[in-house]
Every structure is written in structure tokens, then in C-alpha cells.
Length: 159
Image (cartoon, rainbow, N blue to C red; front, side, top):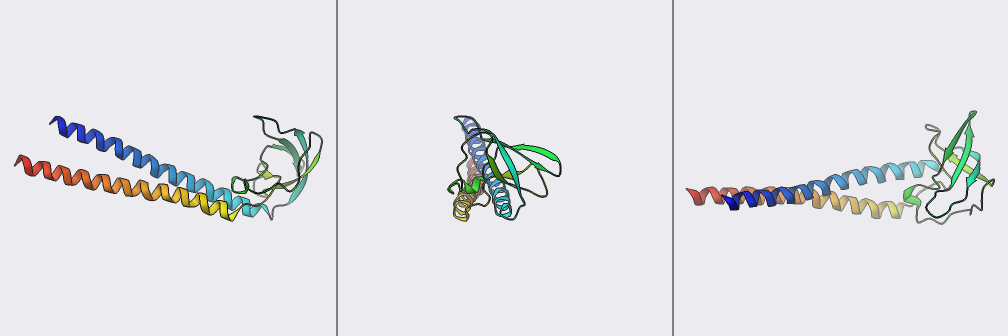
């Protein structure tokens, strides 16, 4: 009886791990796909003039403002995650500098200074999250299968 409870506890811990791995993979994949779609679309977004508010210093993001249709917006995003490995086209020196801001025409709160994204980076990260889903679901199936076989064997031993 005590062995059965220990086995169930072990199975529960393993299942929780594989379920968490699967959820991590699905959420990560959804994020990276959305990020890459926006990054690719940003190359066709309208360009507005913006002004740098603060210099990028340790622990702080660069801040800039821009105006669209008479409304002023503040942003911090320099580029999308899938473009992190890309080299910046222009280096920003400090507050008051004028910059080109690429603004999402459907959501003016979303803007970047460097449009686009890296297909290679997207592929690598997608494979990572895909592997997490694959191993997570595979682990769930394998754990449940082994637990069912052990349960069946335990029932045969009792009879």
C-alpha cells in the first residue's frame, strides 16, 4: 500500500514537470510567432519622427516619444526580440536626438526604432519551444502509459 502511494506521488511529480514543460513550450512558441509576425510587418509600418528622452544606461531602457494624429506616445522598444542579434542601423547618442520611429498603424502604442526580425533567430527559438512541446507531450504520454502498466501489474499480483 505504501509503495502504491509513493509511486502515485512520483508519477504526479513527473506529470507536473512534463505538463509545465508543455505549457512553457506552447506559450513560448505563441510569443515568438507573434513577435516575429510584428517584426516582419514593422518593415512596412509608417515612419514618424521621434525624440529621445533618455540615454540608455545600465538597468534602464532608452525612452523616446513620437506623435501620431495629434496624440503623443512614449515607447522603450528599440527592436523586436527576433531582431536582437541584428546590428543597429544607427547609434543613438542622447536626449534630444531625433530618431525615426516605425509605428504600428493598427496600434499606435507599438513602435520600434529598428524594424524587422531575423528569420534564423526565429527558426532556432521556434525549434527550442517546439522541442519543449514535443518532449513535454511525449513525457506525459510515456508517464501515463508506464503508470497504467504498473497499475495493471499491481492488480494482477494481488489477484
